Image (cartoon, rainbow, N blue to C red; front, side):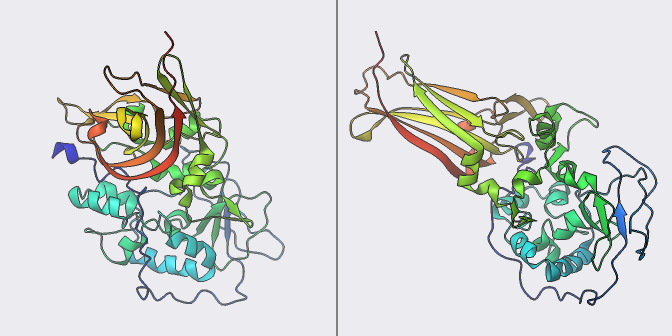
Length: 405
């Protein structure tokens, strides 16, 4: 059982189940009638991740005084796992869709909506149905087993946008003008930063020592990667929720889009006189490692030396990932290497010296793929992993040039 411990817990959101949310499950109540007075607006001070203090004052709208609150120190109620609001969350999510129709359509086909129902996660969760996994993949579930509408909600509109007081969380704006809306709006500088995503996209292994801060203690390290990156001053949304006609996209589709991935990662190749193929991978605008998130995501970089008729004479493969191995003494995963593409070019060298007695080589076929692994076993042999899905990124052919004497 030890080898399965994190199969279900490792954020399987890379896979996609296209089934939409079933119709007829929810009968959303009518929203406030047109003409309703603007709601109270909450404005938070500059974001301080560890700040704790008094709650914000609520200031009712006034014809002469902007509906704002004075900047008081607060503990920001940002999106996080295990919100556990159950049927209330499902009902309120349907209310969101009534007014925000385009955003709701995008969310319906997103990996957020499919967080609990996508096939990769469902298969892994069936093996290891840990509450730890459901906390992020079905954060609104308030009982186990997770079933019904709340399971199909996944990460809903309300999970990110509705705080525990029922106010709608939104990014901060310059100035102190009120918002015309049939509900309370809480504007938070923190919501416009990576902290809004970190609650589910960076966390420790359940077996990690409490308070451990080293990268090896974390199942996902996306937030700390971002903080170390050249894009540390940019939000996650700036890339993963691109603006369209003045609105942020809510389909989060880019993580599986080959064209978008190629825009993020370039590849160049060269074959030197010592029969070594060099494949150089470079992030064009790095905001974290490539790949990031789910510890079962990796890049496969490979090449084949081919002879007459395309016969494979030699095959070389490298996997760029967080190399985690099961400790034989403790039975937990330990980080032994991390060779993903970070903020400088990563050069992968593959030795293609022809085997003795092989036919004369004619060409080299090379490739780069983004893979998601379903099972790594003990992690010591990357080639033994079971592949759940992959996205081809680059593939090319070079003529073979014999080694110089």
